[in-house]
Length: 479
Ligand code: BES
Ligand code: ZN
Ligand code: ZN
Image (cartoon, rainbow, N blue to C red; front, side):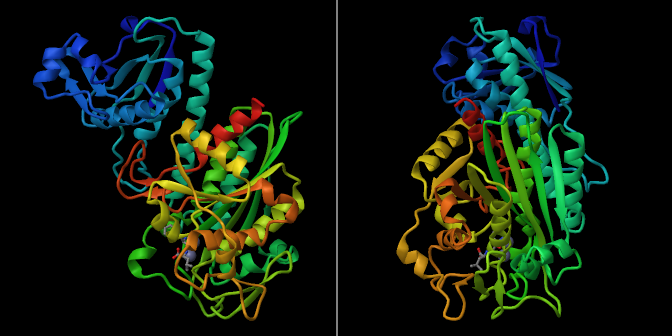
């Protein structure tokens, strides 16, 4: 499905069907109120009513907020999926709702069909968005145009991330992920890509990451994708967990928990999506993406519970569970990123713990770090972008749970509680004193992947983190 901005009034645009939005209050004055009433339509959020004879699809929104348009537009494209309408048209609903509308359409109509022998395409090939407002109030055309263009870039980047997450572990190996990053650099302005293979990783003393990937036939890769515009105002580092498969290793996952673990690369894929959008939006910020790509498998040379690994910064780690592998990979990648780029902020994205889902539910990203002001900015970006975030607090007592009797630190907590926080406190041990206040960790284990559709997320990878980080980066460029 394509979404196009048309510089014409809605009634002069030709399309098979018109999509309109209404609140419950507005319904009484609706031109076809009786018809809608008799169809049982009450104007509730995400409720839809298809009036085929009138060629109108009416969608309910609780009120005129961007979030509501995002999910109502997604509900509308779901309805259109079961029709034969090849085109639809929509009027603007205020400049503040453009992003929600465009995202609802492009993210809601996303389907991953790569492995279907007979892919079912969405019948609606294009949705035409008139530049005029639904109530004829004047909108600034250039503002509408620029908001529309960036919304399309961000939605496309989110779908790009989804595609990567949804690709099977055999097709998206660490090496393949490095090829994708390299291709992105070739096709995009100001993007450069450097890849460290297993030999380079050895030279760089990244033993923790190498140990995690050792049992796999697909050896680890560290991918450094950077965006360097002229005269950047800030330097940002983004780190992503890229476990192309997490079987748990020798601490093998139960069969049912292993299914979906192709999503364990979602942090790395989100960082790729962020860089794609940052380049297409031409943001005046230097952005460095560091992806730790590895596969956690079993074999005769697998790393073991009881092993002690030495990370890049010299800290020793007692392995007590090989399924807590993401933090081992991130330990080395965080050290490498801090050694190579002096950034104003460093953020990491990882499907790190099941415990984060227990704490916050499956839809919310867990945000952890020392800087409350920075976390507050992220909450605002979450509201702006429609992603859900929740803060999980550090404390010195939880920190004691990852002490080791025989090494500097242990890779799991000694108690089965607070697992998302103890994982973040483990990462904290690999953040330099200088960067402590400049670092945030995003545990996206919950929202990165879904087996049942919610909001504008169909089955599979959701692209969690992409919209959130872009909202924060765009806000940063206004300062
Ligand atoms: N990749 C998983 C975390 C995860 C679980 C992501 C479910 C998405 C859905 C991670 O590597 C892991 O296995 N973590 C363990 C940690 C435990 C061994 C301390 C977990 O959460 O069970
Ligand atoms: Zn694991
Ligand atoms: Zn994992």
